[in-house]
Length: 313
Image 1: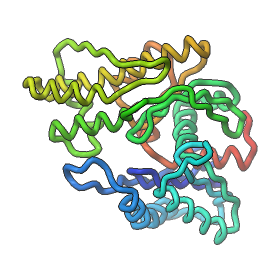
Image 2: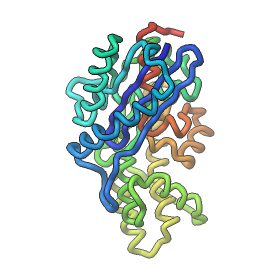
Image 3: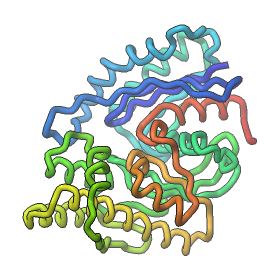
Image 4: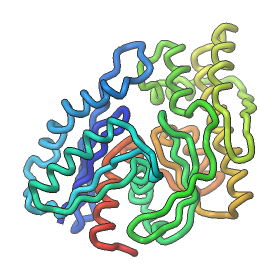
């Protein structure tokens, strides 16, 4: 059977199918258009673009597929699995999923965007045993920089917020520095390529308060470096090193507080090779393949399968 996942996040429209026989996921996704020089979108514009894009992605996804094999539809209906978590762009996917559920007469499963990200890592990294364990998960993107204590429930998990940014999100910092350097939004991949060319020594001193962090300092420091005539390669490398060091210090503080739990890193920022390679070596942490790191519906489709079949293995 097939399990459909839909996710309409702040910057990406996506739909995915999980095949329970083969264990494979196919997906279609598309970034929302952002005008050159702009830092993101208003929610009203995001809703408009999701509405315009979702049906075309769905058509591509089910091309050549027997839709009678779709057993259930899952959707991310809110950013985080807590009371009051809301963002208008998720209503596009939620309403579409409700229509498909009614038209195809199949069950509807609602999850949070954050649960989908973590699920995508566990699927991609072949760490599905963590669905039955406690672990620490970081969700680091343009809209979120936080860590949760995850309790595996077999078919899903409970998430408790244990650390967060107190100001700027990591993805926001990357995009703001990228725009300063004349890069195109979203700036992450371009900033990484510049940073990899840097040959100068780096030293970053992040601000940590308990297990929480402050990231606005990196934006101010990068402005200063640019005014001093530092190269784009150096500024890019400094920005990413500041974020890497911040996440490292947060991780160390959380491990000291909660014990040596498995570590999972989700979200678009965590697809950065500089951060990823460093953390894999130090923590033996789980990361998703790049296609499953940025916003996607794959984790939602996989969660839908697990919930509908009460999977605990």
